[in-house]
Amino acid sequence: MVIISRNFKPLSCPWKYTCLVKVKTSITLPQELLVRLDRVDKNRSAVLERAALAYLADLDRQARDRRDVSIIDRNAKRLNREAEDTLEYQRIP
Image (cartoon, rainbow, N blue to C red):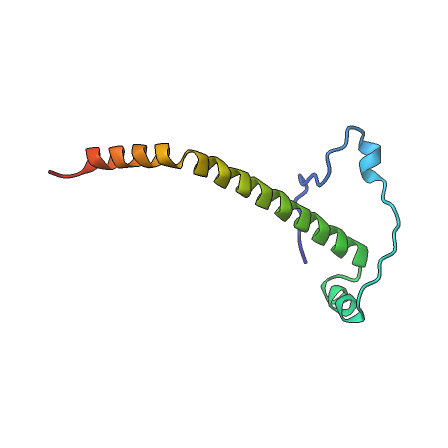
């Protein structure tokens, strides 16, 4: 079971009430997946909500990592020169 801290805020809503409102929906899943979900927690909605939040957080993390790599790549030559310069100062004669 996934435990979310008390300070966890999955959604940022300007009005607290709208964050508490849940919308009923219907999805079709394979029976085997439902059996596995039931082993985790009998409350399927809670399991699927946690899974969706974790998935979306992972997508956000991947996007942030891609942006970081892009920034590093754009500055790679300068960063490598600085690293080589630093290593040159540290070299023992």
